[in-house]
Image (cartoon, rainbow, N blue to C red; front, side, top):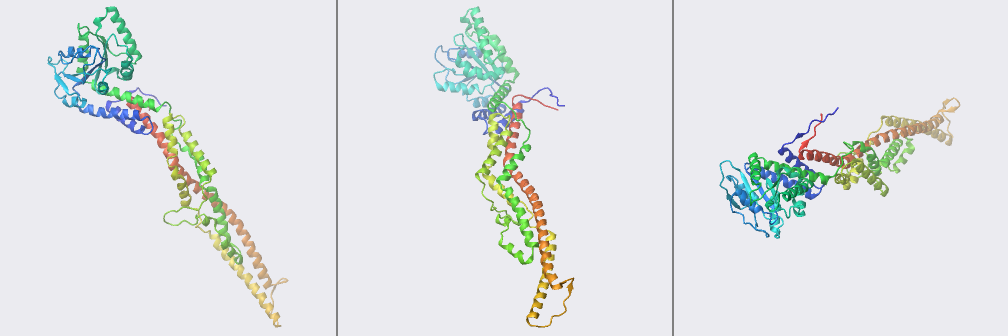
Length: 540
């Protein structure tokens, strides 16, 4: 009995590899934006892991007038950021570095040209890179694009809100709600609480907490601060120092990115799972329809008729068997006579009729629908496309399968030779009797005395030989026809089995294998997505 073991967390490397694999498997099947987003995460993670992991990039993001530039100056102990009230003053991001040695390549990747080393006590927030971002609601489109770009790349996000616009839909709908999977790398501060009474500040914080919970950011640190009075600044500083000292915010951010990208792929994939593990059980109806379209019944009848035709030509009454030459061999007419070495050419089978093609299309569609049962719609559609991916090759493949099948027409039964020899002997006897009688008639015509005439009872031997030979030859021919009829049925059954086996192989190669590949692809995608989302369910 299978028992589920405790879920084991996958490593970041494993999750990234799984996300890349899932994106590759989803190519051409799921939403292009979701696939591109997953690949972007993988590429970004590859770069970030190769840069300074001893530094933590913290970005201050907020709206115009929220006071994030003031907060930047307060945290860095400088006047680097220009403070404005109602209009955006930050056009490009700038960085304050606490022990920035080795951070150059990281800031180059972030495309932050303005960098300032901040004097600090030994060990105090060493490794912190604090960014002051442009306003996300700036009237300048380039400012918003810069915010969007860096929000996707930094290690830790500090959202600076103010009492007037903390409930603004712009920040919640565009940024906070989409970052619900990034709770561990998100901090929210309500700035300027010194403008509120103590009760009003508490109510604002409670309301903001409610909004964050609705955004899916329950548990995210929320601090009320004032850069003017210093309220909450110590707590914020301690929080940032702890995150920097942990040296894992970059990995936590990447893990959150992977989880979000995986969830987006999961959503694009849709719900459901296949109802069957393989498609081998679908071969029967498909093979039957393809056999009919390939003309297998026609060939089977031709095999039986050809066997009887050749049998009569080999064992029939010698004076009449030559007439068989004027009747074409059904297999030769179909260009399916004895196989020769070399490439297999096309047959002369009748073209697939509209009815046969309709039956074949229906069988392929039903096979695909059955195989796709239970699959999410994007993957079910991929299965249906896969079933018809080799449609142009199917008719030629079926014709080649028929042409390449050994129908046994090259083999001549031994009894044909025996009966054929017997027929010639019987014919020789009848001919001898006929010549004997002809000689006697000549003697009578010339009025010559007849020689001694042996008899068999009352009948003279020449008559016995002639009549007996003819009757025996016709009897042998009749019995041979019965044997040929039985042999034709037996050979037709063998040929039908061989033909259906070859048609089944074509159906598997051109229809079932592509279908099975898609079903397997979905299963592999699901397994990769499970790892990318952060856990594996193992069974034993």
